[in-house]
Length: 329
Image 1 (cartoon, rainbow, N blue to C red):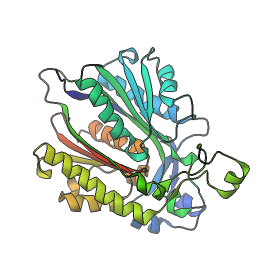
Image 2: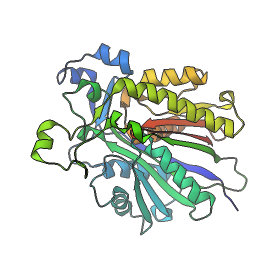
Image 3: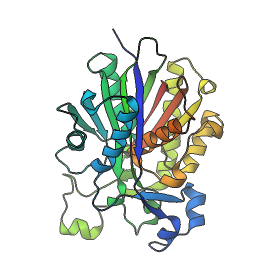
Image 4: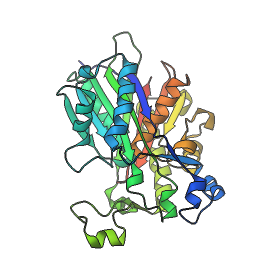
């Protein structure tokens, strides 16, 4: 017997410190108008030096668990999507488990960069559908400010810190809520378009690596733009066709909050009004795996997203990864 998967609760956390475009003008050769015209971003949040990714995820997780009506000990599995974990090991999900007081439930990190939250939801859905678990906490959290080069205007204007979370659980028998379909995609042949060269087994941190700046993120923006719009649109179309739906059936589209121009291009390719697009990047920037759950929680708590709404989530990230998730909230 297969069960349906329902979003039982959502949560988010954004650090207090704001890094505005005007602040960036003092760090790198750029200006507010240039940033807004090219990205739609006006400010982003920066984590306190004393806070790690798990600390951001903790607050978002507590909000999501509270909204679900469950207790931390009701969580049977934690999936933590991040590319900026606290350590290379142990995994950040285990650290979060301890901070939450979630007993000895399973705890696992997933890294698909900006696509990580959607990929983690897909994994959680399989566990719940098959009956292995009833309640799974999925967190997307990042401290991207720790890997951004604030001398590189092509990247430092884009990224911010934050966390979002959902509790996914077995839907009630009479509930229409369900994850209806998923489309997951990756093309490792294009991995060099967005990467963090230093710090892994390929290029361990050395004095030479630090001096070269290879411990910072690098990106080929134009190629990323082209691939993001193409693959996000393709995955979205695939999941709609598989469920015999059209974009007209959808109440809300929640895209990865990377760049306003990317989002507008996707809306045009899907032929959907921007009025149905949930977008908050103006005040958050690109928070990678945290961007979708942050936007979802904002929309839920603002009363935009209501029970029964059909939602299409579409994402893109380093890897190059992309995907789409169709659900009835």
